[in-house]
Length: 253
Length: 280
Image 1 (cartoon, rainbow over the protein chains, first blue to last red):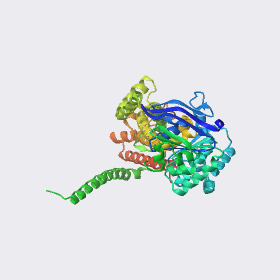
Image 2 (image 1 turned 120 degrees about the horizontal axis):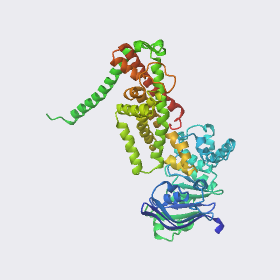
Image 3 (image 1 turned 90 degrees about the vertical axis):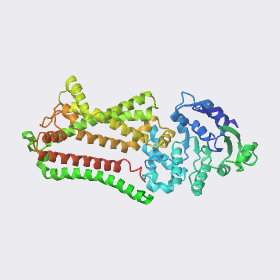
Image 4 (image 1 turned 180 degrees about the vertical axis):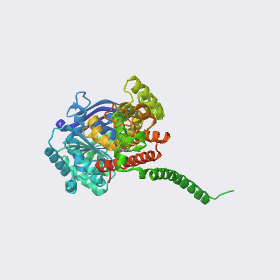
């Protein structure tokens, strides 16, 4: 069983200025499964995701305690390159945020940075990533068009493709479907279910229904505390904690 | 007299409209006056001949070359330093006592009258560093003068780049430098170019700072160590010493046309080549 643990979060606390936003959190995230971390806004979910790829360090005045291990290795190890970590742990944001360049260049952005690949290799990576994100058929005719000309749902799938092109091990989606229509959301969820064979997926769902639909494992966070974690059935069908029960049955949140 | 709300609305609208119109009328009147008096003077030979007889006859070729020389020297110095400072302020520091001092210095520099720059340039570059009246001394002085504009407009343009672009770039494994070069700079280029155009306009139009530092020699400059007379200085001398009002207006008309062309031309170039992906 322990071989299946991809990420282990140990006694993790997060402070922004002097305010604590995550309290002593312990969580294991399993390989090749979809883990939902859900809860009301300002509950620390986004901060937790941004800690996993150390993107939170762009903000000043932050401090962490505890440890996060990926494949048994601490991400806070000073010898570890933070850019390598971010390639390993890709992130899709809440707002579709393609860079103001062409569709092709958005997906090629990551692979081009490392300068390890030739042009034709990058073209292959781009094509494969767009296919995995179920966007290839819609954009193959206009790869040079500005990314911003795509619809919202397409832009978000482009952002997923952009992460896939990094050939990451973990993909995090932070409320990535919150601004999208149901059809676009369904397309993204479908591709995620296909992708979990290859990747470890962590998702902050934008509502409980989405969490129920797609997650294998789920963790409920409230006010910076992890309330409950377990399999889909455990958390959504027979929650142990009253607060989880109230939230998933829609009594608050 | 009491007015009802509707009448007040009309009066307010009329006053605001009137204010806007009078600004436009003044601008159009000035441009028309200069063009009407200056355009008939402009001819191929006026643009290509050197001035004779202190500018009473002949063209203004050497002053055009001098203006370009001085503007290019000023830009070569001020643009890299200005953009560098702007990136330092916007990307590499948090608000601190040091950034506040840098910003305050830049803003103070912007408030100094140009003739003071001229005096400083004369004492420091021309006399102390022994450059003499030269394009180099004039260009350096102008560089100091336009630096604050470039810093401020560039910094504003850099800060206006959405934070999500930076986060996207970092999350894709880019370093800070890669993020700046590949994402922030291309997104900010339009604002930066606008600041540079504004500065070009100031360089071309400046008289006081230039007359002190580059002199007013009328012959064609051959190197940056030669003294020169820019178009604006030429106009000033022709008009104030009553040498030739006709040639003065010709020079002024060319100045206005040049600034117009630079504004429109560079903007459309930037629009076409750099930011095509930023528009829907």
